Length: 168
Image (cartoon, rainbow, N blue to C red):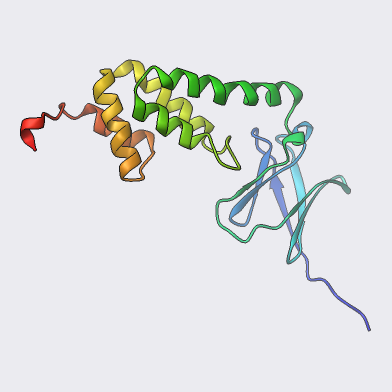
């Protein structure tokens, strides 16, 4: 009795962040192949990535949407060190900016994939200097309460005139 595995093939470019998109998810491959077009073969439960006929990466296939599946060994050595330092720096910087700013940055950079929201956290921390501390902390509090940890939302809230307790 023969067993057949249905496989799908696609060509995809490995982006600068060491990930390529396959269907609705992102999978990592070794950094030395960035900007190259790679062959992606998928089966029901596995993704295999090839360059010039050689297997360079494989991952369990994700069934979710917009998931980022990363093998940290795929990053260049300097990038790995940078990624280890940066989240800690952002968390430390947010501490002196308000309790809610700190809570928001810490929540973005925690969990099983702390680098998933690294750019967003960097953008939020960059806004700290732009607004009065109490106003920015309030904006981050609203982002936490409404589960809207997005730069645009936080900036829109920080731009609003400061609320006064007499308005309540």
